[in-house]
Image (cartoon, rainbow, N blue to C red):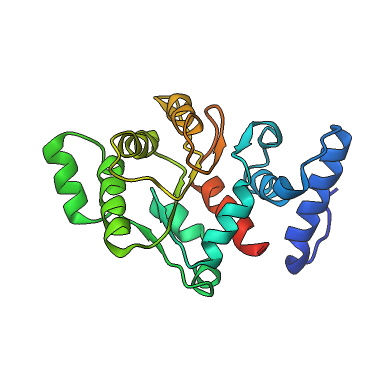
Length: 211
């Protein structure tokens, strides 16, 4: 039998089900991380996020402080960009951007024989340094984006203010996440192969909705 739920109540009902299943599994979430983990579960229907999302010290507070201060958000896909509540972000003075479709990014990536995600991160870092704007990187697809951010950090070229690292896939995915976990950069990272642009956007929105 299907359950009749009014359209406006579907999300609330989903979170009720998530709460019930977390309880059934004996999972108690840390108060600070609770809503972020629940929203990741909500967008993926995957309860593994209760165990695999890793938060650096004071990650939630730091991310919220950055947003309140007008930080921008850079994504590695237009899908993640589309999923972020940009109106809510703008209310704090921030904007969201994805460089992946920029023609100069595509040309440079082809010339250098590297991924557009790598070039995108380089361009985003250059723009952030030039503008002086705090920047949160929300990476949900390309491990090379995380690898490039780590390289920029190691070379002393640029240190991201915050990284949400949840790329999905098989090639260099788990390794790229560990590269971020092994830094002092504030982060929320999902260990393992799972993730996605939808999860990256969900984490951003969880922060925005609970300021």
